[in-house]
Image (cartoon, rainbow, N blue to C red; front, side, top):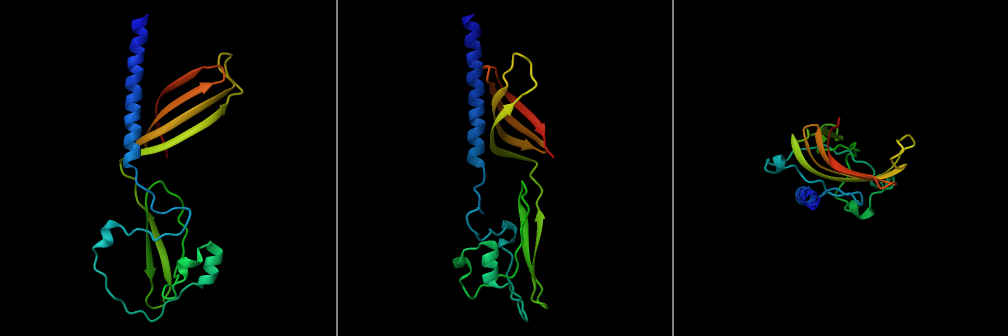
Length: 187
């Protein structure tokens, strides 16, 4: 009996060690956010265009948005647009997307109007992720041996194409618990 319990202990330690390594690796290699919800920031230029030569183009006029109106409507900090030599020529809202979105500002040199065009970049084939979920479940229809409420935790650690990998655990009000690994497809 003791050997059987010791065998489970070694397996449990090995599983916890593997899970810990996956969590540490995904936290270590996840990209830092560049754009935040607190304030407007200058978006970083893509690596592909940093070395492209800059050329001067003659422009007859530039049509700009009225700064004070934009500041009020979009809640932009006043100091962000205080510089009189800088004008707001176009504004856009990009819908959320799991991957990167490339945004390009285009100026019509004849009319002076600007527009913003955007494209969602395809997700890489495989990537490490680090997403945690904690939830409370209510089961009004269940067997007698299960509790009515259950607390669960999920950690999504990676993705290969549409297949996601997740570590899950759940415990209910009657002390029943389960833990395991889950693979799921998301679209």
